[in-house]
Length: 415
Image (cartoon, rainbow, N blue to C red; front, top):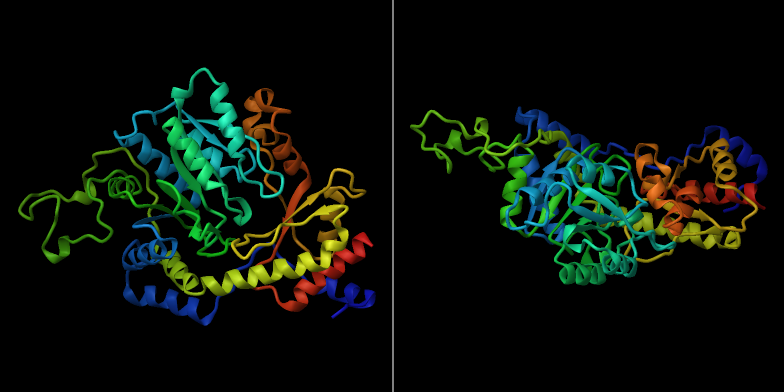
């Protein structure tokens, strides 16, 4: 189907192609009503159900739900600091990570008292470069002060986890995957989030599996999962998902003691608990995960096929059936006759929403201006993408005529 210029003008007034969307179906309404009918909206059985189902999906032994991807990062990092098995991980120790990410990744590192160290990214997958990690570790005078590698599977693209894990073993580092944008992406037939000691996910409204605001931390390590359950609930002594005391049993205090483990605290924690509503939506979405990913992949495939004619100016996303696409990232090539600003403004004028690709955190985010002098010019790929990359939507709620319309608008702007 090809839309005429007159049709484009008519449709563009009404058409709005969003970066992300969330549409309440019959299943989501039923899930919310089930919570309301149960008479309890604070963290309870739906949260436990979601944790079990998502752990099965990612193929980890454990999952703990928290109220955002940011809080998942904070809880995961805090647990590593508290756990005496990891003496290198302490306040002030260094975390190797990517400069090209949503700022929450770096905020969590700083807020837990750790120090981010930035390594450049691959210009095509936006993933941290393992060879640059190893070069950096070989060059520093204080490798003993490095404790964690925190790769980010940005836009759904998986990092080279075999190499990252090899480097971590060589230098006695822990790996924590930020898989917030890669629900279901595969790396050598394994899902991202199952490839390290622990990982985090976000279920923000625009993500592939959506719950509005919710996050999760995944691990096979029982001690870590118990510690994270405590930390997310203000450091209370019990780590039970659902309190057993109403059933006449408590693993922490005898029933004849006048103590309630929900109000006894042995570590300093946070209030990162989840409402039943988010978990119910997450359960509903998880049941449709495969369909969601196929629809997103089909949209990316169609856009690539029809926008390839502009490859002299635009770097389009690599297509793979292993990638669960968060969005459709585009990089303006170095010698393009178009600027990102111009292209984004023209897309917006025609009803197509876009977002810049986050920016290079230490050199382009004002909150981290104190790092600019140290890193400026040292991460050319991340800095280039931060200034010249953006993304549009490829989500499952877009229909064929929506995707055709996107192509027609690119034709209108670039032809």
